[in-house]
Image (cartoon, rainbow, N blue to C red; front, side):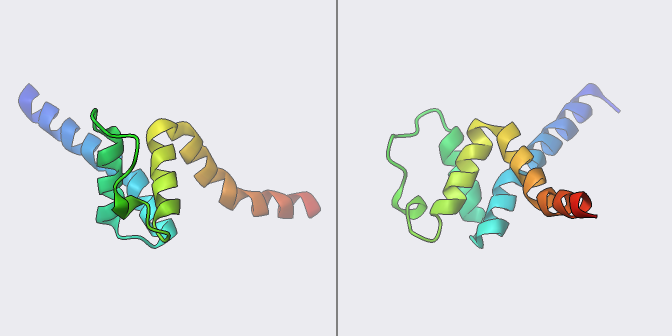
Length: 97
């Protein structure tokens, strides 16, 4: 296995890992995953404007845009919230038992 092959495999893995937060946000908000991925691409591009495109400001996709923006700007908060929200009822149940 050459160094170029390792580099290519690592790049593929990194690209797949970058797709996970928008895919999770799209699943949570019932939005098309390609739209969520385009939101992430727009947010990570160096020349993004202050106002988002019209497709990102529609009433049904705004929560997904907010989640994708959090996942881009503060990934630790995004993952901590995804872990904390489902675990809260479990912790409450353990407290009452």
